[in-house]
Length: 118
Image 1 (cartoon, rainbow, N blue to C red):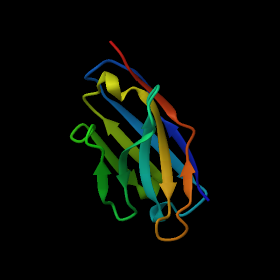
Image 2 (cartoon, helix red, strand yellow):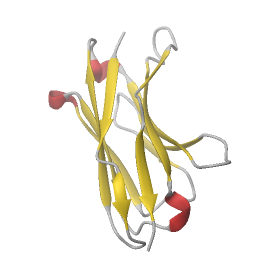
Image 3 (cartoon, helix red, strand yellow):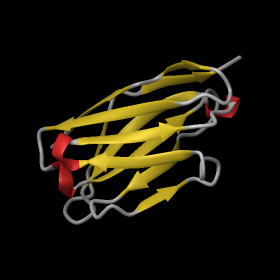
């Protein structure tokens, strides 16, 4: 019972940076584990980064050291700071929320396009 809206995607050159935002509404945001997924053309969806309700983070090996996930519970928002972007980071990025302590029901945003190109 949460609605998610992503923003911040766009076109960026290799080596550049973007910050994605996911605004949540409709439920108790602080109780949700949050994640960023991405799906590149011709590839499967993959989990990029996650942050639990307790603030623990996890990253895909391909983005570790370059991406940072964070959350601001007061603003009901989760962020993905993306630095040193590579061509292979091009994908549609999706925000996801789940209550792992309750129903394990996943909620998804509409996605935002990130294109890395020179």
